[in-house]
Image (cartoon, rainbow, N blue to C red; front, side, top):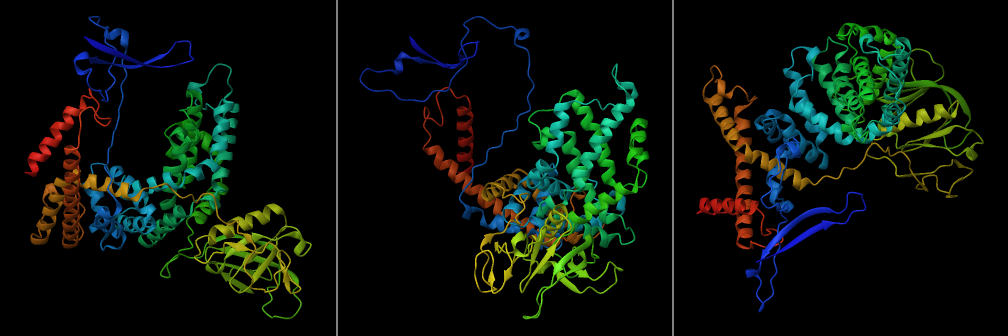
Amino acid sequence: MEIRVDLWNASNLKFGDEFLGELRLPLKFLRQSSSYEAWYFLQPRDNGNKSLKTDDLGSLRLNVVYTEDHVFSSDYYNPLRDLLLKSADVEPVSASAAHVLGEVCREKQEAAIPLVRLFLHYGRIVPFISAIANAEVKRTQDPNTIFRGNSLTSKCIDETMKLAGMHYLQVTLKPIIDEICQVHKPCEIDPVKLKDGENLENNRENLRQYVDRIFTVITKSGVSCPTVMCDIFFSLRESAAKRFQGDLDVRYTAVSSFIFLRFFAPAILSPNLFQLTPHHPDPQTSRTLTLISKTIQTLGSLSKSKSASFKESYMAIFYDYFNEQKYADAVKNFLDLISSSGRRDHKSIEQPILLKEGFMIKRAQGRKRFGMKNFKKRWFRLTNHEFTYQKSKGNKGDHPLCSIPIENILAVEKLEEESFKMKNMFQVIQPERVLYIQANNCVEAKDWIDILTKVSQCNKKRLTVYHPSAYLNGHWLCCKATADNAPGCTPCTGGLPANIQLDIDGDRETERIYSLFNLYLPKLEKMQEACGSKSVYDGPEQEEYSTFVIDDPKETYKTLKQIIEDVVTLEQEHAQYKRDKFKKTKYGSQEHPIGDKSFQSYIRQQSEISAHSI
């Protein structure tokens, strides 16, 4: 005798309620003298002796990856986490714990995901990527192949762009991608694939307009590029320029190989993978996006022979529309802006990069406490090093009347019209004074504010509040404060939305890295052997060790020893936790319900652990 319990989910659909599962409870478990309480695992419906034909069921192929991590409190991970976070400071970086993880993992991506999240969480991603990128550049012999492989550097930068650049893609590409998916303009330019009634020239024009618009929004989006990406691009540019000083284009290709080839082009090609669309586009839209992605990728590559880079003749013909210098100039200006960092090293070989220039009207800054403060027309120039103005356009070598280092710009904000009864004014706030400027129109004023904010947003002393009006006649017009150094009365608006705080659990990422080290422990031990072999035997490298990058055997061995010690310690903690948990395990509990086939496997695993520990 048994009791059968069926569980259904009420549904308003025409197909009726949805069957979730059943359980069968033998009556012998139920005693009248006591209550019975237990959790059961739902089972599929029992069809008796009837068997369903496989032809009736169909088939579904799934590739499921399930990862389970048991995370301890933060103090358990201190030794391993500290070892990982100092990776950028290890000389050489190939001897660091983070680099070692990339060496032993089967796929670089496997190591890159938790490493990037961990370093982002603790604010160490830029120095780490700078260190491994610089090491990779030093090993690169041909500037044309720079960052083209699937190295740890490339995978880490890819993952950083996916995490930090998602909002950037949303504000840059999503509006046009949505339009392409909804309007369905014919854009096929392969004569063989043309549908009946379609016109080749009309299709080319449709495609050209889409490419032009996407190219424009990308190259005009430099001020929206997240700061962390700009800092990484600056580091790539510096490393490439130092390594290949005779190649003037390498500073651009080092950056474009990521921002165009690995970021914008893939996002256009597969917008659903970058959260730009909820679903994979239909075949016609997908074809349009493929053609756009190919063209944008080629435009961004700055290759000298672009038409030859296309295998298809129809793509080479189409690309002739864009074979103009203005497109190359736009790409270079964009790359200059996103690879200009406020965190410059004094040893940097980078020459100042002109970002913007033009005539505007400025009000005298009042270096003298008394005297008339008048308005004069001046030629302004902004580089990634300084903001200057001089009397006339003149030559680049002319000495400016005033030079403001980028690190001295504390905020850039609009100025209320009532201050001087003048429109289109903004203010550049410095430690000792404020520079008031009037642009020619509102569009130009916004452009100047955006780009000045972008290049100065990494400054450590940036203001959080400012005065939206000027200081005139002994007081601030906005808040009436009389002290000229009174704190601002209005929150600054300079924080760019592209710099979004990520929800990352540092302990979970460290646990994931521990799990990888533990999984590849035999490889860590093999790498130790390779270090010992290299230290004592200075001959041809053994084939079994040739897969490891070991620049300094002694330093690498020391790191490996520490990694293994930390991994073994954590493994012991996990084993103890599982033993304690196993002692409290109850069959029929919510965690291990009756009927759960995986419970027997769990019992075997814990028994083996207990036997091994004895």
